[in-house]
Length: 388
Length: 227
Image (cartoon, rainbow over all chains, first blue to last red; front, side, top):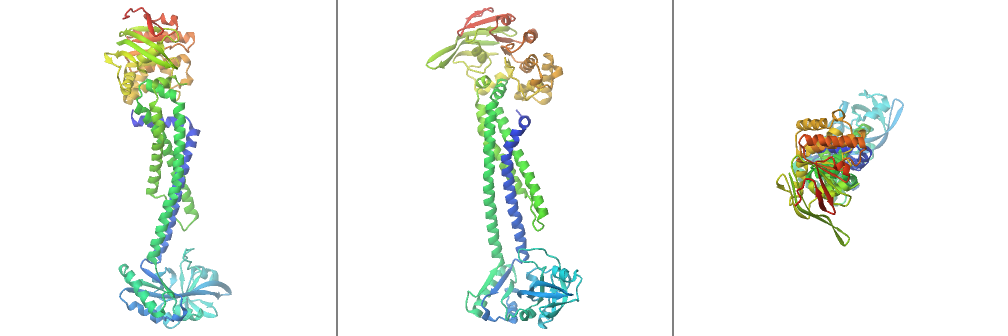
């Protein structure tokens, strides 16, 4: 008997008992749905976390000094750029404050930055310019404002050349940022960027307590990290009073955690697939008993053992594969819906996940179909015919 | 051509051994119409199962078309049933989910015959039994007589050596019974070999030769080839 014939028979048999077939498939549908959904959700989340980390730069170090007595100056920090292994250095500080303009008032984050800052953290200008070295040098009262600051104060983003009053001092707006939206690392939308040196006064801070360092290339990242460690140890005399964080290391750690989580979730969801498979076996066994007479008739008119085995296995594989496909389509729908609702995340079913889930559901049908199929094939035609 | 020699079949019932067949020897020649008659418990069903290769004898030998069936494997027996024997059962034994055509086609599917040829052969067989207008009716849309005719079509579609009819009229009213008997006569006239198993002497009278069984032994044979 050809496989095509067996598939036809299997579909006819599945159709002849629609309710039962659907309920049997339900186990596989739920199994595949949960595997695909969970894995795709984790993959989607991983994707957006990784891309957010990537936007922070791969070969950079974040330095934080907790010892206030270190008194590292801006020129100390900037002179680090002279070292071969170090690329750029950008000091920054931050605080909160109130801005006023045109009778409107707004609570904002204030960030003092240097020109290099935009090499480490994405600042996308909608119009105008960024904070430059010259601004820092002459402590110019200029600022770059986040998108929603502009909109909230002026009602539009066309505000280059306007004045705002920041903590009692007038600042000239020289740049407006693009809208960024919510982000894991805090949004630029409600931030006012001013020259680092101005921010020191405004925030009553002296010295540099946090800055970014990039290595001259990806290969010198570790060397740069060592250089920073020894430099800071020399300046502070205490290895506990500063920290040098390597973003690549953090990224690796997060990726490792996420992929472990993804495996774990897939494993847990996989259990429901196995349970679905047991459901299929159960129904197939019932079906063998119910169809004993049919099997007898088929054998009497010439069906061989392997014809009966093929028929029943194809039936269970078709059943589970159909369940798998339905589960897959359902999860694609749900993920599409989630992507539409959560604008920041994109969830798609990757080809490998789809292939894995469908392959696995086929395997489940195969494995759990073997026992019932063999039971059916082993029936002696004489006994099967007598059965009523 | 069927040759049975000293066939024995013994069942164990509790502590006792029951000789369902106790040394049956029988030759059935091509184009014969033979009735095997006997009361319940005479061993006629056991004999029919053995002739039909649904069961094997405990002792003795059995050949069909000079092929010794006695020691055949399950697979080989399946091939014999498929190609050499056409079954007609008392209960019709049609597959309820398949229509008349698909039921008749089934033995050909197991022979591996391609779809085009199957269609021709199955349609022919249904024509022979006068059901060409009900090809796509399911068994539950057919009367008992019609269902049995579908079964007859299924039996003869493979052009078997032997058509084995087990109480073919047992579930039918008298008119349908007459139709089926007439159909068997017709098939016999066309050159088919027919073995009819029945307990009903009137039905047995229809056959040209009667073999009577009692207690697992042949007690009379109008063909007279008792050995």
